[in-house]
Length: 232
Image (cartoon, rainbow, N blue to C red):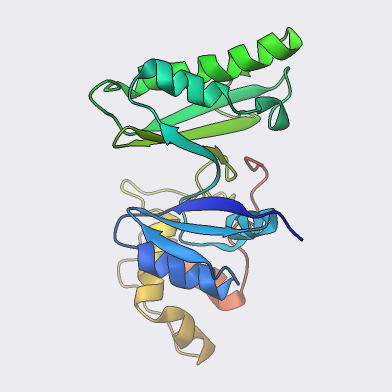
């Protein structure tokens, strides 16, 4: 029997239900709507599937632990209690994204450093070595979401945001993110229209985000097909 994991797929505010519908079409049924995200559970393969096939999700996070973090010391202890050697090599690199604030943790940069210290100290005490920080292309990207003094620690399976499709094209002055364009297209009924052979007309084409996403939808091409790096 496959081990059940818990995932969080983040999304542009207001597009949560559209993402849940898309995930259901991908065979991910056990979903629940969150604020700016959709949670789901299942085997690890579902997380990989969402990374490769979701056009609407911004990131796909694998939840490791949730717990009370009323202050910096509690945050440090909670993060340190995770067995990080299961997820990163002592010679590897890491980065931390920290989202949310509280009365005690009102600076996200400070909180991110506490998380980094907890991971590094845990690995150094166990092995005598420590991973280093790489903010651009780390082996492991850690996401911590703080809400009402509860911290949720996750691994970012996507790595770079999922709107970066891996295709090289010109960006205009105010480019629309591909994930938002895909959500708008689904709301417009485009996938069904494509199956019926109807055309798509974009009078304000710009750099072609809507048309590129619509074409990928019509062809059934996974949006992550051309990405060369993943967080997992």
